[in-house]
Length: 105
Image (cartoon, rainbow, N blue to C red; front, side, top):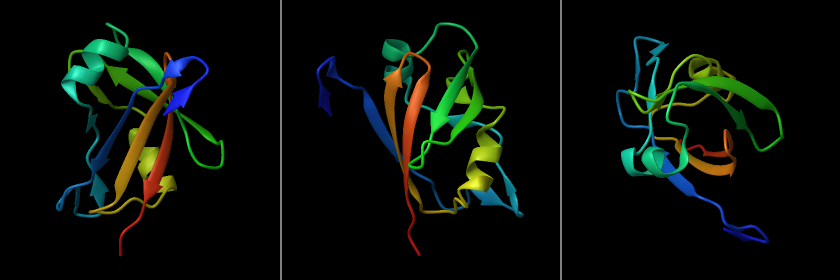
C-alpha cells in the first residue's frame, strides 16, 4: 500500500491445519524473519494489533523468537480465528500493525 509517507510494509499468513490443537491455541505467532530484521525492534517490545474496527490489542514481540507472544492468544480468541483463516498484517507505526482477518469456512 502506498501512502504519503511511502510504502507501508505488509505481509500475510494463512493459519495452517492443526494450528489450534485440543481447543487451545499455540502461544506464539511466528513472523517472517526478513520482515522482522528489516522493520521490527531489535529487542522484546510491546506491539499493538489494531483490527478492522480500530480496536487495539497489546502483544509482546519476542525479538529472539521473531514472534508475537503475550496477548496473541487473546487476539486470536476475540477474533474467532480457526485453522485456514488468513491474516494480513500492515505495519502502520513502528510498533503497531493493522490486522485484517479473512475467515474461510
